[in-house]
Length: 331
Image 1 (cartoon, rainbow, N blue to C red):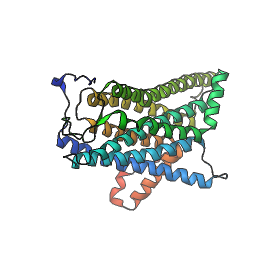
Image 2: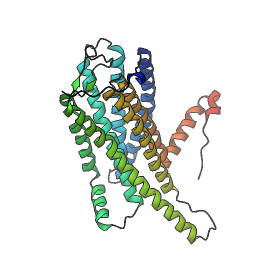
Image 3: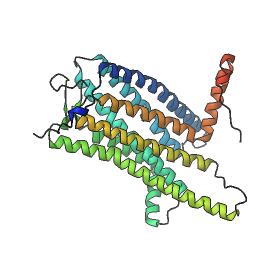
Image 4: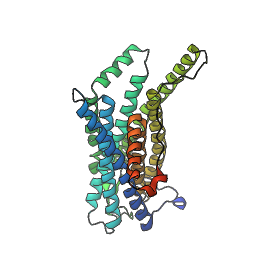
């Protein structure tokens, strides 16, 4: 049996009980923010659904709704796992920890691919490709948003649930690890499956998002130059809502790329270096959902304005907090 090599122990990263407790508390705080932003998105989309004449959400709102539901589920799962990791010091229910970990990986897969799909959708709507065959494929995918999201959800569980059988979960006593229910590769098959999971769940969605962001940025620059030339430089071109969506899309790509680099490093310390840094991997996923949720709210101009108005209205009830008001920008 091939065991993953241990890297330099002189530079090992080990988390103490205090470190894990701090990660647990921070995860709880992030969970509150994430649930707040995503519940706000869900309530706004539900209102739009009721107001719609056909009682139907547009594709972008439907994808955002799916991301919000998955983000809330991920925060609940991460907090449960962190709680188990801190409280169950003797690893009596390590199997429950392993199952929670697989569910976290599955929901992460769904969030990443749904975010990539959202970027792909905006790229299709904002950019007109000259390649007719590629354009037809894009249109076919966008027309079947519900089916595409269903495939993403099924693929998330289909690719991650086998981790319980392919990998070995440890109880933290014989392996020397402090993370109860840690799932580790013990042979070539397990190691290969870990690399397969990282490629299909992290790297490929990132490639899709980067490709779409480059395409959007290129066509945006070209469009702005054409508008500036047509106006003879008399005034700067304005895109309004489109520019807001473009900024949101590019911001989500930047956030994802930063998270991808940190997440891959954290997973390397767990799988290859055999360190007890699994809590960091879970924490980074929690941070990502919080930041991406705030970006999604800010990207929708009407959503952001309504949130700011509600926030200021709430502060009106408490005059002592009037200095914390946010100025509302009126168009």
